[in-house]
Length: 166
Image 1 (cartoon, helix red, strand yellow):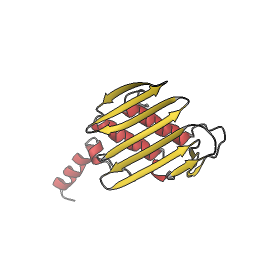
Image 2 (cartoon, helix red, strand yellow):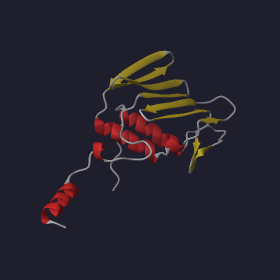
Image 3 (tube, one colour):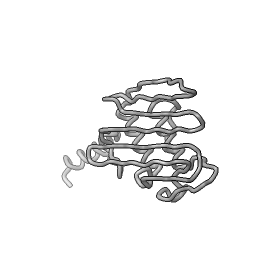
Image 4 (cartoon, helix red, strand yellow):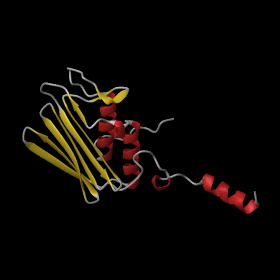
């Protein structure tokens, strides 16, 4: 290899990686066309919606709504997408349902090149096999759903971000 080519490759290897240079499958770092998330549980409804460049986070308890509007950075969006990938959200079934009354949730994500929808009533994706329902009569959120919800709360600044993995 020529010395100039070797120097160029060394320079590239030394550059820090940013959201724009890393592609994660199946949700690559891309602009969301539409984002709608809702979780209604134990008398408390939480919705997250994209509004232009902003994300609107609304919590409604006992008929009283509290709304916060945030403008996530590019890195925050990238981490959110990585967290969706870690929770295997893209593998979730379109619908999870267990008879009875309980929590309900909806995820509707639209990217320029694809759409993802999943929803549940009294059920969540199964731990270890997210394409299957948990079918838990207690109706407690599964670990994949809790990972997803943690990512949502981090995106809107409602919890501090998780420490980086070592």
